Length: 321
Length: 304
Image (cartoon, rainbow over all chains, first blue to last red; front, side, top):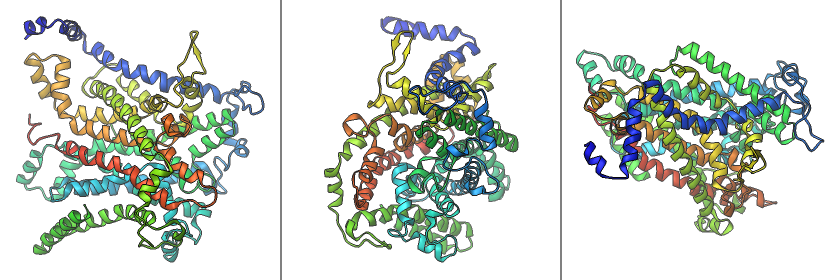
């Protein structure tokens, strides 16, 4: 095979590279593989993050042409937690007297509720799609489709459905006593509608990932379990669940991170004043040119998400990382 | 499509009724019907809005108040919707290509090798996804619009080009892709790769001939999710282009321009029609890609 390769001139450099790679130690080989990714991430992700952190240590500067104010150390962070920056934001960062008006609490409630429900529904749907039945590809297409709807379209769609002059949704939910007649004026009602919309839109994300995990399970294992006399539930509990667990862990982790950063759908569907998520605060202070404050909230958001994921790793004893 | 689903469901319910003892079957069928209906309903309602002439849109119920099919042609006269969709598809393809090629190599490294520094490196990649996209905006905007000089060289101006959106989004979608692919690669039994290596295949040969084909469901899933995420994206799509279709603005801008440009009444029917057309490319993508998602692993391929 090697002589054949050598006879094709342009293949020689390729072969030289392949040979060189064969001679590397495992660790060297791995770092060669990882270098392109880290090169890209360094420019487009790590450098901006460091830059934004530096920005968060500076005061806002809204009058002078230079967008960066004087160096202020950690003043912004102290002010954020003691309420000193609340005046610059449409809603306070955290306020225990009005929990539903504060960014931190609204964001955590949204993420917790929607991700739990999406995981359960997603698992159920993935199990359905994992079965063989006629027309499965069409059912699969339908169940995955909501994830394909761009945020502007999906936000508008649900806004119209629950808009009291155009849609009918509010009337039904109001009749059931779940929300008031004008839900888009109340944070609590808007949050509920937002969660419903988010579940519709994002469950397919869980379905796709869990389904891919289910499909990777070796079918023979089920036969072995069946022969051994395992019930349907036992097969699920002792074969399916442990084998899907790794990909399920990744799916929940990234859904949780996404949900804690929620922004687009709020902006389109209910407005950042009604449901003030943390990302809403980052964007609105950014738009008002409070760059120092905006960077501070962004970093605090990232830190909170970091804490939540740490808690998630500890709680599930997950081995994702 | 709806007809096919209906017949399927009928068949399912017939089977379930013939053997009522099998309650599982009934739960399965019932669940499928409920999921399909609740998922389809908002789409159906978009059609109701699109078909109803705009002046009649108020207190809409479950049926259209008119059958104005012309709306689907009208929306192309109002704005270059096809161009917006083309821009979005192109940007999504670019990002997906980068994410799949870089992400699969990184996922392979993380998933199949133990090496010093592995955990810290994975954590540092994960941390990127903790930040709201806005946190990257100020520095990235300056970098990608040519308003910075690095070592005396001015950075290129990517504003109003596909690269302006594709650059930030490939970095922001990579962490997720790497984690999913790491999980998939790590679940492939060592035996297969070892066998290939013993038979004289090189490292890279084993990656492309053994590992990649086996992780096809994972690769396709990541590809589809990345494509859709970029097609859907809201933040950089808005900020890195000025909204003109000729300036590579994506679909988000096209849809939004319907809302912004009308000052008095929002043309809900146009909005709904544009939304339905905008979802179409993704529907086609999912329809074709799903076969790969599930059939990538043939039975017995993983036998050790």
